[in-house]
Length: 162
Image (tube, rainbow, N blue to C red; front, side, top):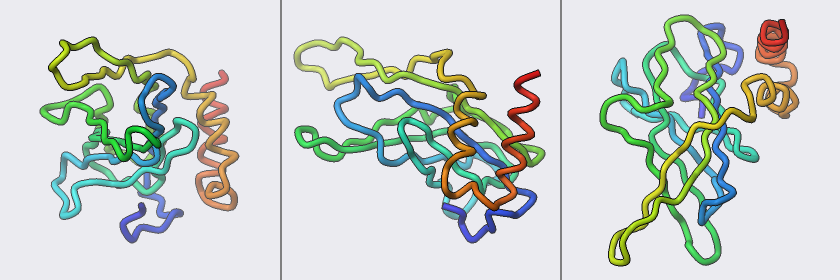
């Protein structure tokens, strides 16, 4: 997930989002952040998932967007869901300075299709949970304790509460 970067590298950014999968046919067990610029050899950064929160604390400067995520269920097996990857999608962010970047909160929604059409879905923006609520959860995650992120997240929470 860190591509060889230290969790305490001061040039890292914390990038996170929330996806409500309650109405999806599967859960969400992984997500991938696409590095659009500068082009990198790997091209994608894995994101940790926890109860709808997706997060990566190792992101370097550049342009990124959520490319796809996925999960599985007993009936559906493994399934991958893709955000639009042509051009910019709603999660696109350009990181020039190290910081904390919230890509938004979204809800999976089925889209009605014809009988012979493949299933379709949309990712609808939602207003809750908020950046502040999600950061309050992230700061309690095991990987945060004792890292630079503990202080940086608490500082961001203070800014959001003003």
